[in-house]
Length: 357
Image (cartoon, rainbow, N blue to C red):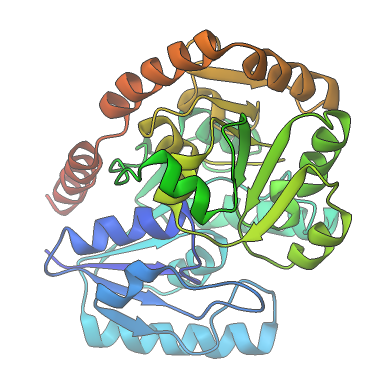
């Protein structure tokens, strides 16, 4: 059984690690991917994977380059001769599922674009149209969260197609001694620190994070990540918000006391799972499958996207060491069970074998 995984680019983040895990767990698997663009950074996991580069493949829409990427991917498929072509995210899913052959098509939605402000309303309608069509050419559709799958079906994407939800498998990050981690990040005391780690791009809504920090001038915030809005965020950040760019995740989650996510859209964010495995309680917006990652009132707080709700949640956790400790312990216990790597790999392997039978 040979599986070819296809993704537009492997930029640093949860989706890259999800795909990387699947490829590295299967000695016969191959990864076909394009290149990161602009301020993005490629995830280090790619260095150890069997990769075939798809020339001209990127996230941005460009009919000419996309056509050449299609030709490049078709050539790779003919070379690899896969039994299953498993695509991830929209662009790769579009090109891969337009190529026919003696193989099965599997596609994973790691979220959706309908709340992403970087896409226009017209672009979103075009994407929904193509996804609805492509669903009819796919043997199995996967969503990383049940809520994400439900939202896609309600948008008319594959309502009658076979679906399965497979959450990401995440290993606990190595721990760094708290004092060492804080010193590395420029935190020179024992104050409570609220940490934000994600791509600094519109869908993660860093502007909302800035507003939360402005409303709470006596609380310290630390923002890590890179992306097209990084310099803009640095310029707008108030004095109690330090913007440090990309940094080591084990060091980051060992240094902060509370994790926060202000995203407009998510699938199942790996960064928040890693935070929970590190014993860090999470505050997040109620988007995508966040509510499946965080059990509100037990491992953290899931709130709506209003500034008042986020501010109130931060104030609640900053004020109570007892609550932070309770949520952190519950987060480790739950995340260790719900997001095991072995279970994620086994579910994919079982799905592939079932298709080939």
